[in-house]
Length: 107
Image 1 (cartoon, helix red, strand yellow):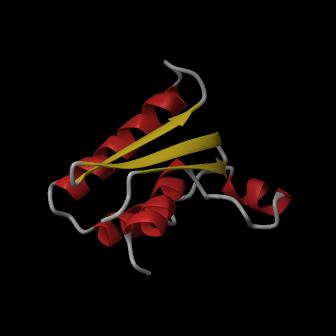
Image 2 (spheres, one colour):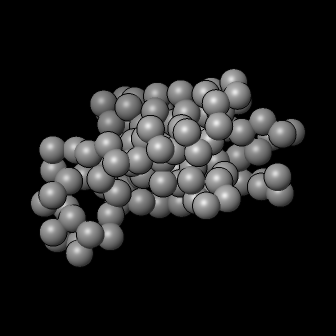
């Protein structure tokens, strides 16, 4: 894999999320940040991304992780989609899944 680090910003119902995927000596690390440290959204983004990275490092195919996370919705997804012509992530989990698929999968 020729990936060093990739960082992408997504808009999702919870706010703007920044997802970083890094290849450190052949091991994939994923981190996501949203909002301010200590806020519930920040904690959730960190946990979602850490679990996804742990699963991939543990041997779960990246495509499987992406498919589990993609499509997860938030109660405000429809309002945000309508306001932005559908060009947004459905939730933090959906954004992380999209980024995993885009960066780590050959689809």
